[in-house]
Image (cartoon, rainbow over the protein chains, first blue to last red):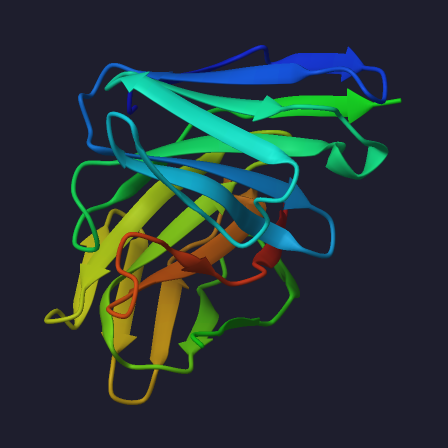
Length: 113
Length: 113
């Protein structure tokens, strides 16, 4: 299994509070991704990173920010959580760009009340 | 814009049957196609990666084929077992933006004992 961990694995928070999810990898892969998965919408890309301090938006980036200060860590922040951000969040890694396999972490279930 | 479709959306078969899951994509300009498995409440597990220059990949009882020109891939599962029950997703890596994957909605497979 690819060395990807996510923390926390479960979180319940209130509307309006900030939340940070962490993804940690031990593979030294260049690319890291954050997805959300919702019934009826499948997997949707939030943000991704192609190197330390290099990030770009995905298709559902509004309300989310990311940071990558080290190769191994990719943080996803919800500045002010809303109920629409209740979801399961997955981190993924990829060694290079389009040619390589993508591996997923175990997920974080976030509930915003 | 690349779109990925998976048919059927759900499939129920008796144990021991051979089965085929289908994936189609609208733009043949891809680097590769990847098949994943997702168990309920879990992350995605990579099953097979087929590069655009390849026709098929095999892993144990799984065989994935790729016909890039027609925009189709199939995942063949031989001698199905109850443990194969899961959601199967395919994803393509488009050349237009090769850092990202475009996912299908998945096929929910149930193998009855």
